[in-house]
Image (tube, rainbow, N blue to C red; front, side, top):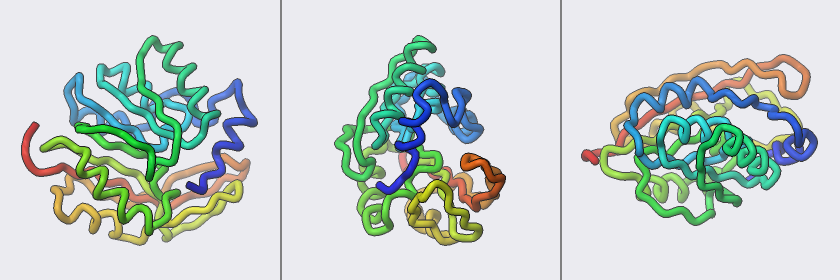
Length: 201
């Protein structure tokens, strides 16, 4: 994992740099599920989406490599009165046990090198219950802006969709994301994908 955000979480212990409201992606994906479905949130950062899923009645496991981010996530969960299972470590290697109805990541798995992603995605599929979902938002190489020294293994157009050729793709959309986390307004090109495994469960 080569994300710079651990340093930012350490630098801002009293503030949530991504805010505490859930992402619009998390809101959209949550509508696919019924409580108490099990959710795995990869690269959960400061916990805003994990806590949102938990507050909606789901059983949530949040994974992040940053201990400082997880400290904030735990605090947010306490403040909202919800329980989340938090795991620290590299999302490509941390041991988790399925099955999960949803495997979710928002702006995270592009930090996993492509050679590791080739092993990660099949493992995540194996942890998913029949009829379950994967939902990912990743940065693509169409508009690259490097902030805070981050090292990203950008997705190429269509690469994420090809990884789910054996699933039903419910949504695949390219979009531009406005950002100013380094103090300079800029954009990232991104792809959002929601896919469903075969079967029912």
